[in-house]
Amino acid sequence: MLLVVVAVAGGGFVAVNSAGLLEGGAAPTRSAAVLPPATTTVTRQTLNDTMDADGELGYGPVTTAVSRKPGTITWLPDSGAQITRGRSLYRVDNQPVMLMYGTTPAYRDLKVGVEGKDVESLERNLSKLGYDGFTVDDEYTYATAEAVMEWQDDRGLDETGVVELGRVVFAPGKVRVESTQTEEGQPTAPGKGVLTYTGTSKVVTVTLETEDQRMAKKGAKVEVTLPDGKSVKGKVTEVATVIEPGEGQDSEPQTRVEALVSIGSSASAKGLDKAAVDVTFTASKREDVLTVPVAALVALREGGFGLEVIDGGKSRYIGVETGLFAGGRVEVSGDGLTEGMTVGVPS
Image 1 (cartoon, one colour):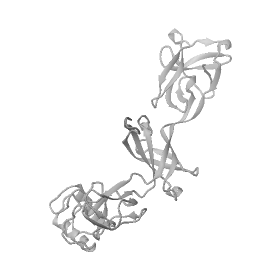
Image 2: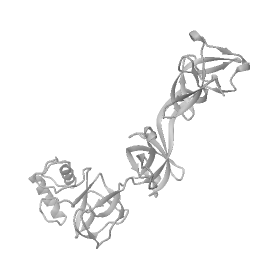
Image 3: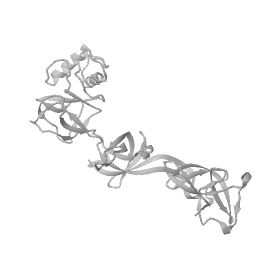
Image 4: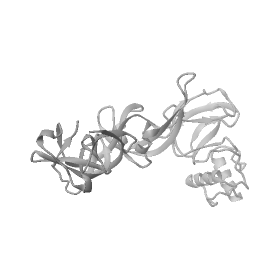
């Protein structure tokens, strides 16, 4: 028989033997003398299209807090400290630079007359901190300025009603200080790094080849195996394409897919700030289906696939529909196909 190379789900290829049905669709039979060299059984099972990948348990991407004001660093938090909304991230000239929650970076002075997402973020934070008298929207009004002056007074700042660039740092939520990049007493200036920070939840970072991107879809459930062998459930929360520089001078940069995975039980990872873990992705799952080894498939002359059914010392071919390919097996269905059937595995 001829070997036929067939593309399967996931970008791989398998070689199957070619066979033929007789003209008109009648199934040929063969005697025991020419039966295939090996056989297998049609099995009913759950088929999972899975892939294992190496991951790193930590706190996710590291962000640098960059000074936007000149002056002297007069206070820095310790590495590992957690900073929440409204608290000082660091101090310049003994005045606080405060953390607020938001996804739009601070990029300008906020004052009466300006509009935008940064204004809305500021107002939402002020409201959460207990200040009122204004409407949370994207317009900085005089009512907003009055609330800002009250906030400034509480923090020992000049009551200007203007939040100057460099007074607040917006982050998606509370942060954990990863490391400091300067020291107390050192000068700082616009554009100079002060400290780095991460989120506060344990996450797993996994880097995949681009052809494996289908495995890591946002919201997909995964299984994470920790260094002690315990397994915990996880979920893909973010997927991004990253460019990794080449290792050598003449090496081309490589495109990779980076997935962030949240883990369901942070208690299981207690005491592990950073650790290598294994992550099992499941792209597809088919429950209670008939399967055979991929090697049992034969390519039929008139198109499609079939199986060589062995019964009573003789064989016949039946056509089948293929479904999910995973782990060297394939989902099959077709008229007359039942669990427990013996089918040939061609050489």
